[in-house]
Image: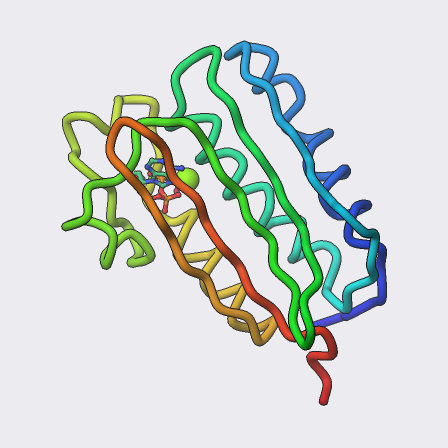
Length: 156
Ligand code: ATP
Ligand code: MG
């Protein structure tokens, strides 16, 4: 990892730029919530990939007109990034498997719009190389949130 100390918002804004056209095409809005700005130690290119994969999923699995939220917050000894959507959700029985390579929920539902099922496996790997963990909460028909937790000083 080529880590650098960067303000957390620059990571989020640069990923947001990359999905601007996709958001516009689906008439979705993206809200970014950062109460208090802080710096994080990450590999910026790889970290942007994490956010991008999660945002791409949020856009893809949320109907037109839906809503996507990105929250970054610092806690005592860690920080969190939460990417939430108002989309189709993931059935509870599928949740344990979505980080597996090539796993996709309901092949029929999974549209022909060709994903491969690798995005979340890559995200999980990149989160782990940043010494973080990833959790998911979801309700079918209501939406999904991915909660990422990282140490504030990963090199300790
Ligand atoms: P790829 O990312 O490789 O193009 P993919 O999006 O299908 O393909 P993943 O990103 O690994 O693959 O996601 C795995 C599966 O988890 C998806 O096929 C989808 O069924 C489900 N999923 C992922 N993110 C969401 C989300 N935000 N809302 C609802 N379902 C999701
Ligand atoms: Mg994906």
